[in-house]
Amino acid sequence: MFKLLLIEDDASLFHEIKDRLEQWSYDVYGIADFNQVLQEFTAIKPDLVIVDIQLPKFDGFHWCRLIRSHSNVPIIFLSSRDHPTDMVMSMQLGADDFIQKPFYFDVLVAKIQAILRRVYNYNTEPIELKTWCGATIDYEKNIVINQDSSIELTKNEIFILKQLIEQKNKIVSREELINSLWDDQRFVSDNTLTVNVNRLRKKLDELGLGNYIVTKVGQGYMAEEEDSFHD
Image 1 (cartoon, rainbow, N blue to C red):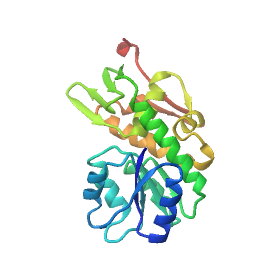
Image 2 (image 1 turned 120 degrees about the vertical axis):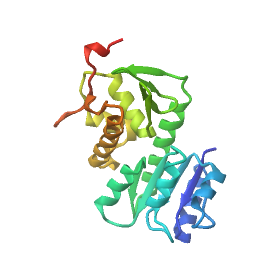
Image 3 (image 1 turned 45 degrees about the horizontal axis):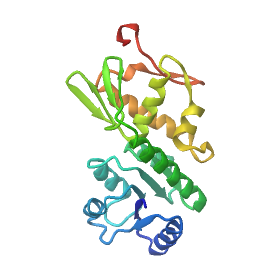
């Protein structure tokens, strides 16, 4: 049974979501003290976090930053605010998805199922190392190592990089990436993919690899690899 942490201060909404998710055999936890969210997260060790943006004391962005500093657990944001910047901010902080309130419960379940299937089925695969542009990518630990430096990627970022590298020097369409990541692109903003790719490229810049993820306007993205890097 997967453990879900629902960080929501609206008691009626919390219990509604909790009751319905439990019908899908999820084990749902809430927060007792909104000043101690990180401590409760650490104690619960959830498989996925659902967090509202508007919370007492500190907002969901604050807690996402702290959780991300300790864990790569999948995170879904909920928001009743109609601000496109909220989605951009959540993705920049490493969230896996964003849902606007009010929402259809079936959409929430579909997103949870897609993320859990992708993340935990993916993590049960044997250790797989890949060499690309002179760097080593560890798909199990979600890290990229180049010489004496390394970066850690989120589940979405490593998945995007894996998709691109497996078809290196070929264009991977935006539609293919969206469908691979989120299963049903009807519920995903096109900007969500852009934010994830830009964040991936920014991290790769730290290793001098950002320029090898190329945007093909109107088509998609490509992971380039020069002949000198080939195995």
